[in-house]
Image 1 (spheres, rainbow, N blue to C red):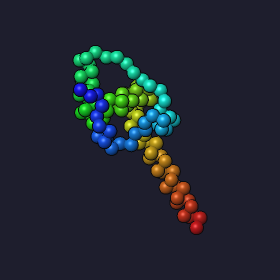
Image 2 (cartoon, one colour):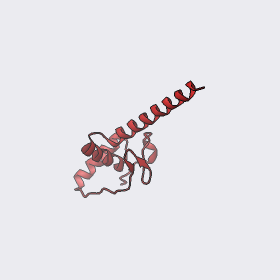
Image 3 (cartoon, rainbow, N blue to C red):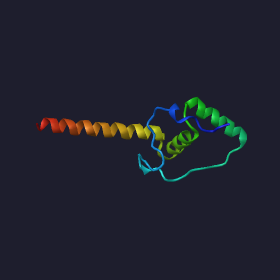
Image 4 (cartoon, rainbow, N blue to C red):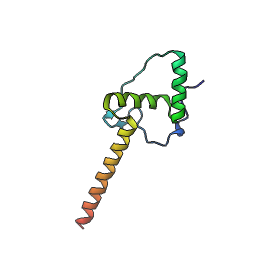
Length: 96
């Protein structure tokens, strides 16, 4: 029984090892041991969300520490960058 879903099951842009996330590169590993019953329920939970176990665990950690999931933070960062690019583009067009 595999613990990971195929990588194409989630269309959300995620930042993997060595790529900058909301606070920089994701370089720290977070692991724990759980009992078999909890593990089975964990796998079901991840499957229901359509995410691999690492993504859900990352979301849980970020929600606990920062008050919002990693996915939320990635979306907010992408939205901010998009807004900044749009503003810069409009500024450059207005100078023409």
